Length: 107
Image (cartoon, rainbow, N blue to C red; front, side, top):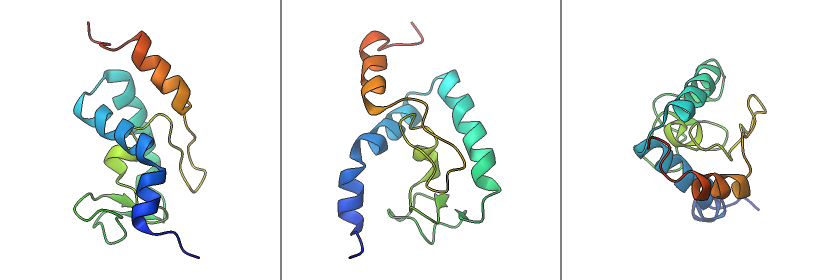
């Protein structure tokens, strides 16, 4: 049975919110990781610059394999590439600890 978009989004909500947060509140280390990941994604056959395969319309560019917005996915340190081209940097638990220990990295 194919997973619905809503269930997929719900199951991945922590990583999605982490990516959105890191996009809005940018930090140099995360932006460097995102840039490296985007370079890899841009060369992938699953790269969808038009957003035809986006789970959420209007969030291009997206991954044609999972439907995630790459602007958010590449900034989610607890996310990985479904094509195994790049891996997560932190687990969800480590990301939460990172936020608690360093809530304002620019301070």
